[in-house]
Image (cartoon, rainbow, N blue to C red; front, side):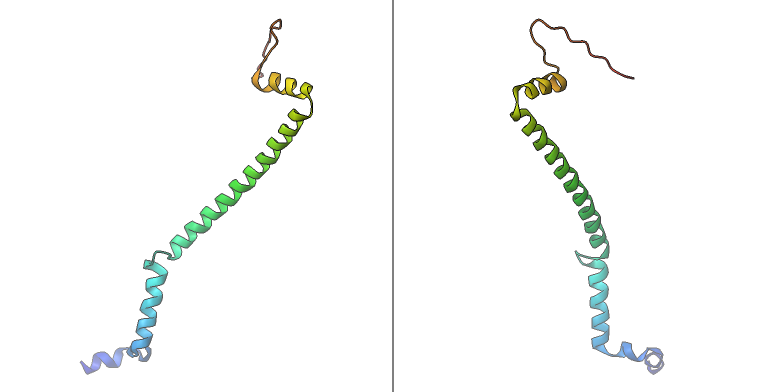
Length: 99
C-alpha cells in the first residue's frame, strides 16, 4: 500500500485540490449549464438576433406601406388592385405570369 501512495502526485494527495478538480469537472461537463449547453444557447441567441433584425425590417416596411395607404385614396386603390387583385364591376383583369 505504501508504494501506491508514493506513485500518486503530490497535488492529488491534497483533499482540497481533489475537491476543486471534481467541482470544476462537474460544472464543466455534467451541470445543467455545461459547455455544450452554453454553445447551444449562443447559437440560439444568434438565430434570434437574425430573426429580430428581419422582423424589424419587415415592420418598418409594413409601417411604410400603411403610411402610403393612409395618405391618399389613390394609393389605397392601387394597393388593393396590385396585392389583392380587386377590380371594379365593369372591368376585366388579365394576370400575366412570367415563368
